[in-house]
Length: 138
Image 1: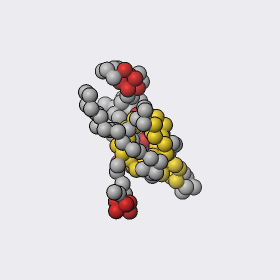
Image 2: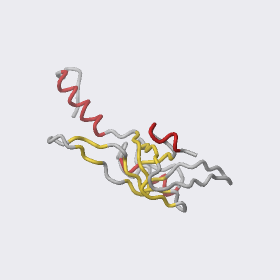
Image 3: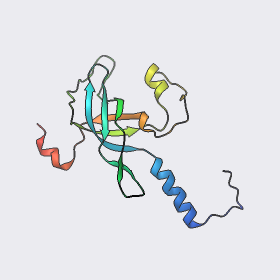
C-alpha cells in the first residue's frame, strides 16, 4: 500500500491497523524450559502465556520453540555452565531480524529472509522466575 499526503484514514481504520500490527509483533515472552542440551546450549521452550484468542473466546497456545539458544555468559576462554532443567523459567527475546546466518556462522551476515520478530528467532535468558517461585531458589 502506498500512502500519499492526500490520503485520509478514519481513526477506526488506523486503530484496527495498529492492533493488527502489534498482535503479530513478538518482543519478549516468559517461557518454561521443556528440555535442555548442555552440549549445544539450546533448549525446547514453551512460551508461558497464551497467544491470540479465537473468535469463540478460547486462548490459543504458542507452539513449542525448539533449539532456542540459551544465554550463558561466555568469553574468549571462559564460560559459565548452567544446570538448566525442565520446568526452569526463562525470558524469550525475539530478534529484530532473521538470525539464522549469524547463528550458523558467527559472522556478520545478511538475513536470509525478511522475517522480523519471529518465534523462530528466539533467545532464552534462563533464571527469570515469577513471584510465586522466588522463595524456592537456593
